[in-house]
Length: 79
Image 1: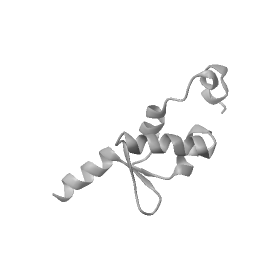
Image 2: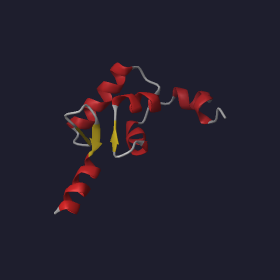
Image 3: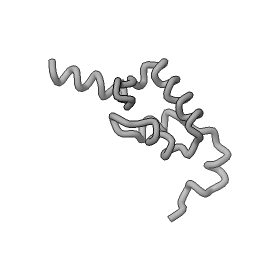
Image 4: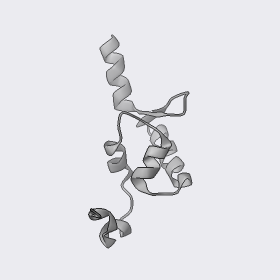
């Protein structure tokens, strides 16, 4: 099933990083982003650093990333 991925329209379109972020689990690795986007790792890290700067994700000490929404939800639960 090579659905939308192979279509020329999706390849020409600029990658929408918000859509990528929405499709990731609450906690993810840079490699997950790379597999989702098919981009080289340097572009993946550029996107990740933009998300961190925009407070969309938080980088954990173990090298994984966590969505900011997931972080605040977890804090409220503990409360």
